[in-house]
Image 1 (tube, helix red, strand yellow):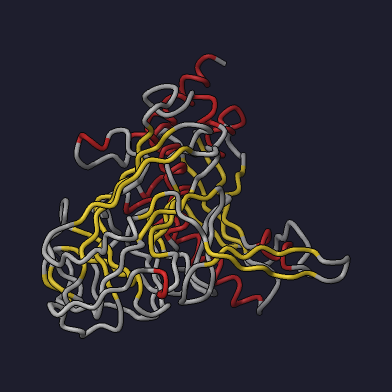
Image 2 (cartoon, helix red, strand yellow):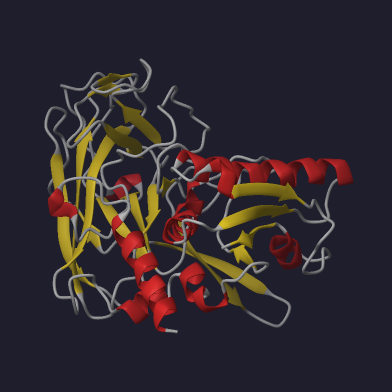
Length: 393
């Protein structure tokens, strides 16, 4: 048992440090890839209807398409010059960009934190923004929202808090309200600088359990303090901001790692199963997401994939099989191909992060092994899953 706990500690230690590849000052930062330096591939185009899928740990929670820029990018997505403006990175070689107002069109950035926030502890939040000179205005109310669960919508407008209220047994009503970010730039301080980076920062007390951070403008245009500037070129339809160097740091947590090992372990579903690791065991990867009807991994999968990477690095002789499953919709042949391609996408990701391909196998089962009914959406969601099976230790 002692050896197993030592292995668990190794998994946790690796998980905490593996992605801290930037400035030493960020050692206690709870944000993965805070300066957008780690990416799957160099950015090639600005896609008005695309999905942010190439930046490690970051994703877009709405249909508003966030953009990625890097020194290695194409002419559209380069640094410092790109299709939507000119700016050097605040740190390193990359940054992201989002529309924040003038109209009610919105784009947001979202990430899952390394650890949930602790109740009644104070956290300092900081990130940097720079206005594109091609914008048609500037705003003030850019902020950071912290939530227990993922928030998102299919809209391309202001992200709203939508609560379903049960009126009667058979009647429900959806009530929408504006989110109130815990940290937001001062309303009187319009973010107008197109040359330098402007810091947005603040301190707040966590209620406990917040795991997701979303950055953007949560106010309607009428309440965003929109300002028109003669210096802008007005080539873009709204206020467009580059975002870089994001930090969330606890100021008064219990210890230097924000929490005890046991509380961190509660958030690591794979690590929790360390005592059951044996040849033949199969585990469901709980939060692996793909584009609809495609085998393209979405960055919402990042947290779970990092746990699997940590496990494989902690057990260097472990060999696993990634197993893809679909729900009951569609033909047998289609679902078989989709499940195989999705399992292969996970293997390809692990190989891209340094895992020896000889340790990894993949297999698709299509819709042949459901674990729930296909007659309900909840059941179909459970059936659409990715698992890994331990082949050898």
